[in-house]
Amino acid sequence: DQQVKQNSPSLSVQEGRISILNCDYTNSMFDYFLWYKKYPAEGPTFLISISSIKDKNEDGRFTVFLNKSAKHLSLHIVPSQPGDSAVYFCAARRSSNTGKLIFGQGTTLQVKP
Amino acid sequence: DAGVIQSPRHEVTEMGQEVTLRCKPISGHNSLFWYRQTMMRGLELLIYFNNNVPIDDSGMPEDRFSAKMPNASFSTLKIQPSEPRDSAVYFCASSSGQGGSDTQYFGPGTRLTVL
Image (cartoon, rainbow over all chains, first blue to last red; front, side, top):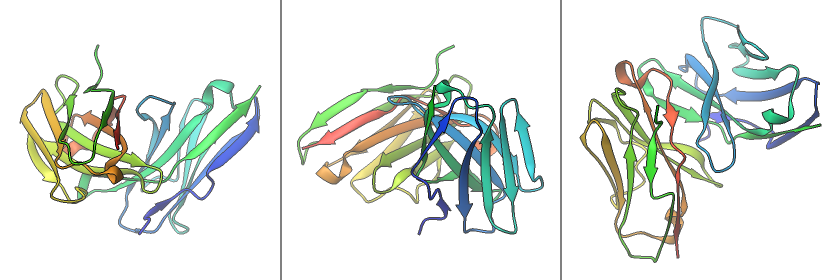
């Protein structure tokens, strides 16, 4: 039972353009969402998060959008840079169990120079 | 400032052998998490501790897996006996805050291969 889904295994964009990574979830009890970035041979690193009381959170080039009615969130990277090439994981959690993150399968982003 | 430290980074063992993975969380963090990443199941939480006490072990696959946290600066994940299907990358992460609610910081992982 995949509660958090990233349906696109990979995405390729040109440097300077926008990257949009998508994530869907099925559990309506999730109330906090996170994006992690992972480089090869390293552990995931936290990128940005959003609470279910918001629909947008921005941090520099990274913006996360949340559509609760559609149970969908997306990560926008503008402008994309070659150093952004990595695997991006979407994760979700419930306030009743804040330590338990449920991760999606990940999307590999390649930003071409 | 040191991040989460995991050892060994790579482990190759034969089926039936005992495997012990080690983790040192970031100093001052009171929650510790063990994850497993496989191609089939992605990144999944196995168990997490808060103040050295196991809070949620629902992700531990079976009795062959056990985890301990004897003190705030050390945890182990043990597999006995190991099987080829246990081959994966195992990550340890730590965080501060109540119930592990703050940002989780991951270690570099241990790549386990069971032959």
